[in-house]
Length: 363
Image 1 (cartoon, helix red, strand yellow):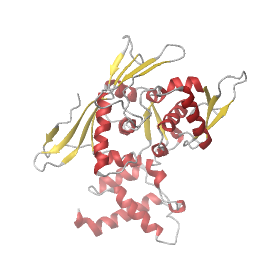
Image 2 (cartoon, one colour; image 1 turned 30 degrees about the vertical axis):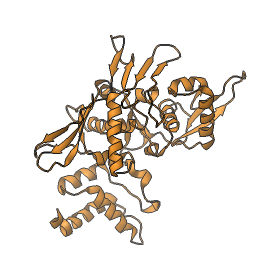
Image 3 (cartoon, helix red, strand yellow; image 1 turned 90 degrees about the vertical axis):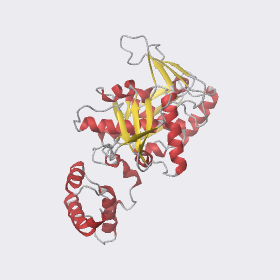
Image 4 (spheres, helix red, strand yellow; image 1 turned 90 degrees about the horizontal axis):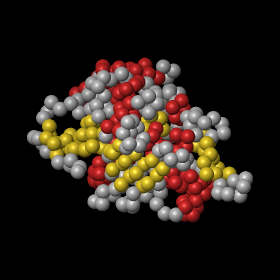
C-alpha cells in the first residue's frame, strides 16, 4: 500500500523547501474536532467508532494490522503540511500542489523532533501509518452517503541517481484533507508549544480547546466528561479516562487554555470547562515565527525577521541560510552591552551584506 520505493530524480528536480520557522502552525478544523487518531503510543488495532450526540456526524477509523492506527503524534506531519499549504494560499500561489516535496530534516526540526538516525526511522513508520489508516465518515461527503480516505495517498523517498543520497521526500495528501485545508474557514492557527506536550490526551485536549474555546469568549466552552470520553475515541473505560482528565486539570499546563472542573447541579458527572488564557493563536501576527518558544530567555535582545525582510534577504543574497545568519546576528548583538537596534530589519540586512562580503567565498 505504501510506496516506499526510492524514486530516482535528475539534477533538474526542483525540491520545494518551506521555511516554516517563519510561519505560524496551522491545523485543519474538522480534524481537530473529531476522534481521528489513536491517543496512545502503543500500537492500536481496535477501530474508532464515533457518532455525534445528535447522530448527524459519524467517523470510523480502522488500522492496518501491519502498521497500526495513525497516532496524534503522527498528526504533527499533517500540521506541517497544512502550514506549508496555508502559507502558499496566503501568498496567492497558483495551482497549490497536493504533493509536497520536502526534506525530512526540515519536518523533524520544525515539529520539535530530534534529527538522529532513529528519528528518521520513526518518521518513516509514522508516514506508513498515515498511508495505511483508513477513515470512513460522512463529513464533507456531499451527495454521497460516506467518503473513504487515508491521510496520505503515498510517500516516496527521492534519491539522487548519481550519488544514491536522499534528496528529500514526496508526500501526497489525500483529497479529503487537501480540500479541507483550502476551503474557507478550514484551518486554525495553533500554539507552537503544542509540540512540547508529551501526553496523547493533553495533545487532544488542546485541539478540542482550540477548536471550541478559541472563539467562545471569556466564558470559554464546557462539556460533560462522558461526552468528552466519547469524543476522544480513546481506548479503555470511562472511569480510567475520568481519572486521567482530572490529573490533567490539576496540572493545568495546556498552552493558551486553562482547564477547570465543574460539578453538575443535579449530582451527575462533572463538566470540563476550557477558557482562553491569552490572545488566540489566530490573533497573533504572522510575522511571529513558530520557533519563538525556543528563543533565548534574554528577551530584551529578542527580535525576529518579517516576511518582507526574509524575501529581500533571499532575493539579494541567494545561497545563504538566512536563519543561520540571523542566529549569528543575534549572538553578536547579545555579546554587545546594548539594546537591539531601533530599526531591527534594516540593521539585519546591513549585517547580512557585511557577512556576505566576508564569507561569500564559502558559498
